[in-house]
Length: 518
Image (cartoon, rainbow, N blue to C red; front, side, top):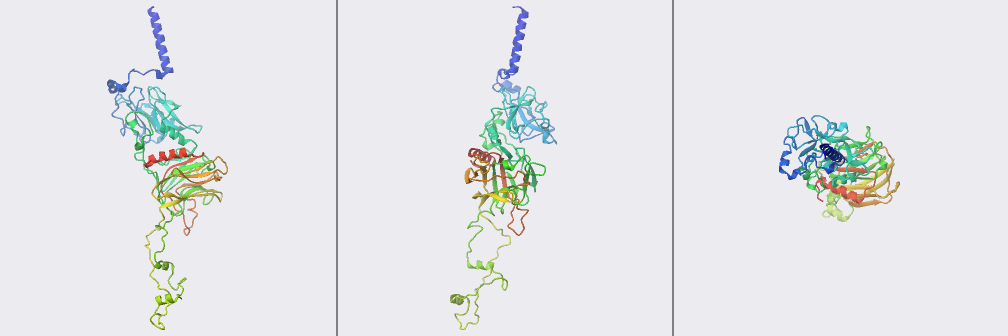
């Protein structure tokens, strides 16, 4: 065999190897045939950077901790020494955000070279993002749950290339368990306000108008799973103690509420039609049972096309609070006006009463034959004392079509004062006109209307969280409704019914983020 033949064979072998590497990249280990994590020399040769890490960023940029952050392996070396995070230039808005990795072994070089596009240039991201080797080429890819043009929610990934992330996305067909759960929650979603550290609709349909100084504390917005901190990019659902705990959206009951809308005039009807809503769920915490408070109220005014969930009065009256039995006869005088105004006590006609209240028993004829009972000084309650309700409250759910109330459902003692309660209201049959309607409290079915009603109006102009449509139409002399005082968390609306399995998963997801026991 001549040298020319050997060279030709060598060229053919090299060409075949390169072609195979292009078509089947997972068949080859880039650069080395050993695992860097098992080789002290190689691990030391590609060390983690000391100038860019958690809370330490390259000059001119700031980290967004609300997104996935930690050490991954975008170089395919077998060791998680590349620090990846979401950043943006200081002073820029979120449209300038991009995802970048500071590569291990590149100390003091630019830490933003290995990056995605910016959001304004088409980068798709969400708060439900993660990193894993979705392309099976030993490199960590960036992935996020995003809404596709078809309206479906999918986990889309950007492949890690030799020098940057790809500008194109591909579908992650085997996402982590917690991401699969998020995708399950997105099925049939109309709106989703998580109220963890923002007031954003994660379904992307509604905007908010804020009344008062309503805010959510955004400190410590993301707590990383230990797997990411340790270097692995695996996400699991067994990270209860590392999930961010929130107090939800706290309303003061004085001047704070939210108005929702899917158009500039803050009405419903363009992106969301309430006629298609088949279920809604939320967590609620009552700091106080304010009078006839509505947790949510969507409608066109007081008693016009309303869908509302609220409470009755100031809570359920009890013998201990709010409705004490009179303890002595002197309480009767509290309702008698001073003489000569108004109705007075009738004359005492019984001889026994005359003997007790006059001098008839010692003088005859009596000189002061008074026939009126003795008047005790009235009890005076402190002017600062406020009427209190009970420790529980009754849930009211109503649907109005025009000015006609079509549905009225109640759950007695559904809410406990200063305790988180999960509520789910859902249809339970496929009837498009008169479906069964169920109300679930803390994962248990509390009541059911076998022939319920659905909203009939697609356009509503006054859509509130924490405020009643009846407030502005009530006189100060009436039993005026008051603003909701308490907290809301994880408010969802669905265009399909919610089953027991989904309710249970939703409650577990919420308990982790509210810091509640299982």
